[in-house]
Length: 444
Image 1 (tube, rainbow, N blue to C red):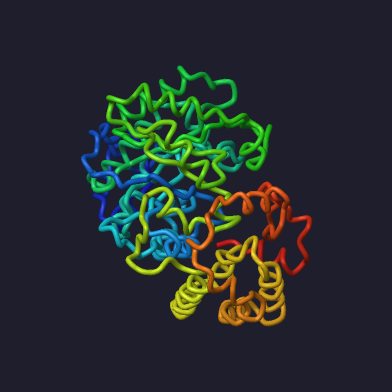
Image 2: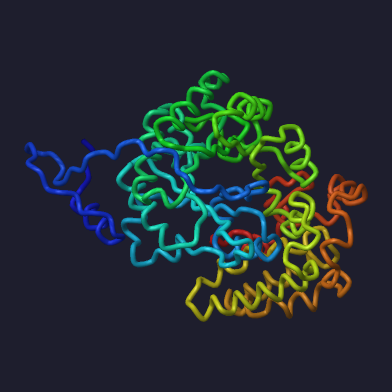
C-alpha cells in the first residue's frame, strides 16, 4: 500500500482525482492510504516529432523564454524547467506560474513538454493530473539531474536510476493519473557513478518501458557523478560524452517501439544534423546551453532540421521582428501581473555575436539599475533601437548560413561573444560588470 496524508487527499480532490478512502490504521501510521496504481499499458497517443528539442534548464526555460523560442521556431519541442511535484500541492491556486505554456501550435498539436521531478508516486500523479488543464504534448520524469539538492537530499533526479523498478512505478502512476491522455517520457543519464555499463543502461530501459509503459527516453550521453563529488556544471563537462551508447540503444530496440533522443555535447545545428544522420532511427536531438547563449541562431532550425523553407508561411524573422513580438508579449504579461524580472532574462542574448549586442545588454542593465525592472521591460525596443545598428535589426534569419565558416571562426575566436558566456559557451560571470550581473542573475 502507498501511504499519503490527509492534506494530499484534499490536493487530489482539487484537481479532480478521487479522494483516497480512510482505512483502519495502526497507531502512528499516516491518516490515509491508497493502493499503488497498476503499471500503465503503453500509451496509444501519436508522438510529436521531436527532431529538435530544447532541454529543461532550471532558471532558464521558463514560460517567457519558451515564448521567445516559439517566435524563432514553430517546430522545436520546448521543455519546461523541472517542476518539483511536491510543490504543486502547495501551489494549486497559482498553477499558471508553474504550468503556463506557450500558445503557438501552428502544426495542429502542442509542442511543449512538462518536466516533473520527484520520487513520490502520489505527488507525481497529482502534478500530472494538473497538467491536463494546459496544452502540453507530454509529461517527462527527471531521472538525470545530478544536483545535491535533487539527487542527494531530494532523493530524485539522477539517483532514481539506481532503482528502475521504482521509476517504472512512478511512470505508471503518472500515466494512470492522466488516463493515458499524455505520454510519459523519461530523461536520464547513461549511468550513475560506477553503475555505468551498457548492460545496466539497457536494464533500466527494459524495466521502465515494461513496468511504466514509457516509450520515449531522452538520454544525456554522460553519466552522473553524485554525492557532491561534482557540481551540476562539472557534471555537464567532466564525465566523458558517450553518444555511441545512445546510438546502440537505437539499434538494439529498433523493433521494440521505443524512441530515443540524444542529449549532451550538441552545440550547433551542424552537430544535430550529424547525429541524426548517424542513426536515421534516432527520434531527435536535445540542445541545452547553446540555445541560451545564442537563441537567434536557432531561427534556422525549421529550415535546417525540418526541411521547411518557410515553416510559418511568412518571411523568416529578423531580430527586430522577434524583439517587437516579444516586447508586445511582455507588455501583455505585465498587465496580467507577471514578474517583471522574469521577462528580461530571455532576450539578454538575442543580439549575441552582433554589433551592438554588448551595448544593448549594458543599457538594459543600466535602465534596470536606475529605473527598475518594469521600466526596463517597457524600454526593450527603445534600447535596441538606440544600441543596435539597423542592418542587424532588419537582417533576416536566412540571409547568412547558420554555420558559415566565417561564423564558426568568429565563435572560435570569441568575437562578439555574449555576456555570460565564453567563446566555448561556458559561464564567464567574472568578466561581467556589476550592472550586467544584475540582469544575468534574475531568475524566471
